[in-house]
Image 1 (cartoon, rainbow, N blue to C red):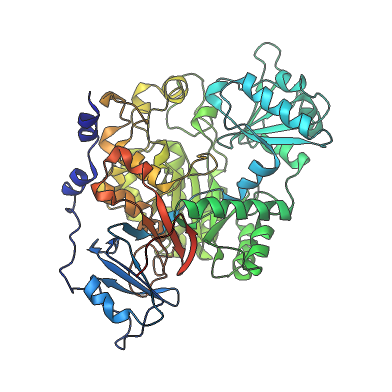
Image 2 (spheres, rainbow, N blue to C red):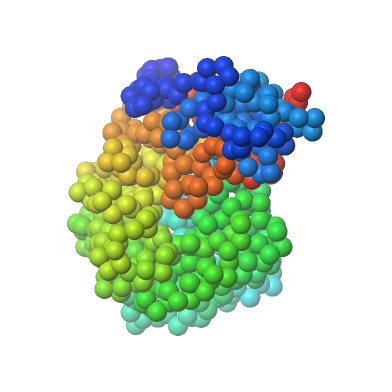
Length: 588
């Protein structure tokens, strides 16, 4: 199949738009998209002209110009209409046809885990146990006096089944505890010293919601821990300092603005010591450059009584760029660890997976969080897990009454079609990772099909089905699980649902779930804002909203779907402040 035919088969952005609401139409000369904020026009601080300004507001218009004053948008419309906002001190930029979008929103990203990439062993580039071992050896040689060794990034498809073995790490260092988290964050590879530190032996039972993988012949712990079994080691080893987390968050911000990301949700508050404190210090020091609406992680070993602590945190942390407004719930695990909770058993193992929360405790905690005004932010991979998560949201509604809660479910790898209707009924938001919408080499054939069976594997990661039901769908990266979290790549993947370079249309993952370009842009902008309760200040380009925007070097509506990831971010603004600029653009 030729590249041209492939682009057609994958649905070009323009064709996609034609199948929904039609392509956005430019405004007539002199006609503003929306009214100005004030009747008396004062000069703007900055005006962009001669642009393709896709507003992503209710009407999804395309304008030519945008004016900014005091960190807010004061005008969106034609070049002619923008002239009244240009004064002697106004900075005017001719964008020469470049595209302007609202700043991108990543609704589920572990920003603070950038710390681990700085201060621990980075295994993300490895593709075999031998490569992992070589990387670990290099790190040990460079850091000979560490009391413990931590890292992240090994991949389950490299070592399917019971996972990597402790012996490979023992050969490197049998006396220093080594704990290496998988790239998805749901498994831990450890050596014998780490097992000893945690007191894990052949007689240690699996903790509720966790699995200690064992040698099939001897029954001894083999070196891989899943889900809550990871905590047995991690609680003993400890984590990073406040200063280390601050450095990691600041480095993440630099990565984010280069990719046009202006608002995120980091769901790791309280799950790891010192993360919350790092954000608080950065907020007080005015060192945050993007907007964070974060989540505190609820403990499944506790119940509704823990919500009182969450309320105190929310009241304490109410900064313009840092607030905590959600409660994270880990409902189940992941398919690759056979811990995602499924309605029907796995194909390769007699288990339905692991439900991390007891249902009654989850329901009561969900109701308490809902009553206190928090959003629920629920990790749910399996179809049975999602059903139970929705049940808890319904329970909370019955206890507290219906209101604009916007509880969200994250990942949604497998979903019973009957439950999609319940999202709309409950006002729940789906948060997906379009970066994963493909039949990834190795992972699909070696993990998903053998573990789930062909029929279930082919129905993974629905998106269009949600949109067809009128459900708000926000996109995210789940960085650092997705190391390269460029939203433009996510937009492309949501449209094409095929691996880069693949030309066989049969390799399109669940093709009926392909979204359109407007769908995908909305999921990274206005629907992301909706999911995080910030659509009143960001997510679209409208007068009165914060000037969060990105300038792209190409118009996405005229870019082939398979090339969107290559579009460049030239400028990123947060509340009118230029936080990233790739190159100088001509000014009048």
